[in-house]
Image (cartoon, rainbow, N blue to C red; front, side, top):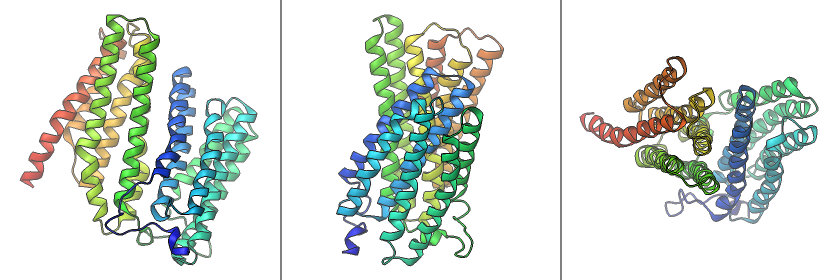
Length: 395
């Protein structure tokens, strides 16, 4: 019975993502929608900071669950029940996102659901793997202790307000994000090791690729809904086409250049847990954040194509693609041990245009900025693979 709880690592089943994992991801489709709409409605330094914090929390719930289903068999009864419970509690977390900082009730719902998901899932794993792998049993005890510790700050923050809530929740996330790099060290039983994190690299790579698809899907939903509600004109049509081209370029950069090579690399890595932690647990967050910020910029362009290039336009329209390029650049560096020079040049170009628009009053409105960002992404997506192949051939 115990063996049925664990994923089949045979070649025939390696890397396969189950239907229930895809079903579970629907909660996070809603979460990405909530975050992008909240950022669009409150695009201020404070609103951006709060959205970043909430995104960090949402990503951390999802990626830890993906690590769990990397070991556990989602088709087994107990694991399915665990995922269904996480979905229910996750819906509570997701519905509270827009008012998590402004409402005492919603703040408590968000923090309570978050802590329940993180601690509950970790305890489930600690119990489930005890007879299968004592080392992983200790690992999940360590993780449970770290989440319980951060949970104190989550709940304390929920009963606070304003800057204190923001600060306490930031401390909670800092504890959690340090945890993997500190190998979840706790007194008496010590710390974990990369050798004990025996992951199915192909499965984790596909799971993270699917989350990128979720984020890109949110971009398509945003552009479609916004275009449908705006009066049909040349400007809105151009803005719609630009946002679509941007989305295609983002897809091409990740799935056409890096995803398949990274999947092969982690599948054959000596310590797949180390690569999985850096490349997928941490770096993918930059990719998702870049897509969300770009979607916010696309919606803003569709609604206000002639608006002057202020800080909001520059941060979203240019900052989103720049953040995405940075994430992809680091992903390539970690998984291929190579730098992607066109990515770096693209980031510099976007930063230069943004600085020129803000400080030198370049004659670019929101639609003009959008076309610049789309052009940069298209050039990088077309030229970088060719350059990458040439550099690989010479090596």
